[in-house]
Amino acid sequence: MPHPARTAIVTGASRGIGAAIARRLAADGFQIVVNYAARPEAAEQVVRSIIQAGGRAYAILADVSDPAAVAVLFDQTELEYGGVDVLVNNAGIIQPGLVDLADTSEALYDRIFAVNTRGTFNTMKLAAQRLRDGGRIINFSTSVVGLALPGYAAYAGSKAAVEAMGRVFAKELRGRGITVNCVAPGPTATELFLDGKDAETVARLANLAPLQRLGQPEDIAGVVAFLASEEGGWINGQTLRVNGGIV
Ligand SMILES: NC(=O)c1ccc[n+]([C@@H]2O[C@H](COP(=O)([O-])OP(=O)(O)OC[C@H]3O[C@@H](n4cnc5c(N)ncnc54)[C@H](OP(=O)(O)O)[C@@H]3O)[C@@H](O)[C@H]2O)c1
Image 1: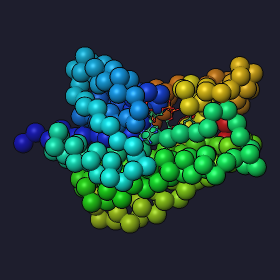
Image 2: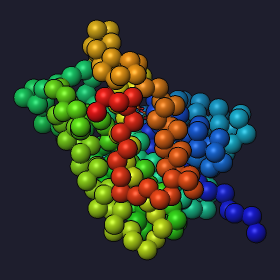
Image 3: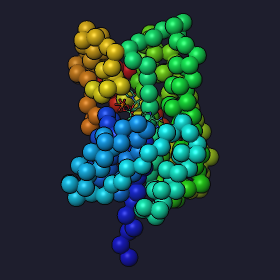
Image 4: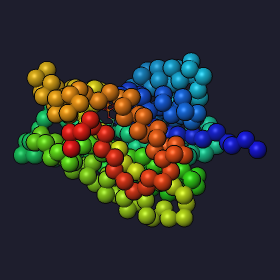
């Protein structure tokens, strides 16, 4: 019997790192759900590029901060592909530019935690029931948790919680053959990083790495692909910082 095709949901896959992950996992043979929140054209463009390259992909709208929308995301994925094997919790937000804790509004704090932390909680909670045994969960943190850079307090806090929840969840899934890991990129050339920063700030942050450049989405996608692959199957409950050596 041939293996059934494996399916990966990539949250926030309409652009940036998520789009690169979707394309890479599709090239590795996964059927892909390209999740997005606000930009259907961008998501459809990612789907088209995967199909043109010979893969299978389908775009599904769902705001990960909304548990009802996340339930629909799983329902539609199962209808389309029959099940879910890999969940990549890539969707995330940050404020434009840098904002010190003292200047962070309650509304901004709530929004960042709603998408980054509660969004990951929402999808992991459903994955506990609905990911097939032997699956993979790959969460997203940030190297700023280690760097403790001024201007990132709420964002770093929201991601530190993601790292902690994932480590606990990896143990709670004992017996299912499912791994839970976290990828923590450093500065990576996407809208999330570049928005609201002047050229000098971008150059300063790019130069933090001894490798002296910004990460590219594909640098991160390769690591996610490894964690999703058979070869990555013995890594569990870990956070991998992927940042050219900044911390
Ligand atoms: N870029 C960096 O330097 C960097 C560094 C460390 C960690 N990270 C992390 O890496 C991940 C990807 O970041 P990125 O730089 O690729 O960001 P990005 O370019 O801003 O893309 C964000 C993606 O997330 C989606 N999204 C936003 N809010 C959502 C929600 N509520 N529900 C579902 N999808 C949502 C967006 O969809 P729409 O297009 O529909 O809006 C988009 O596809 C994030 O978790 C981020 O925190 C990034």
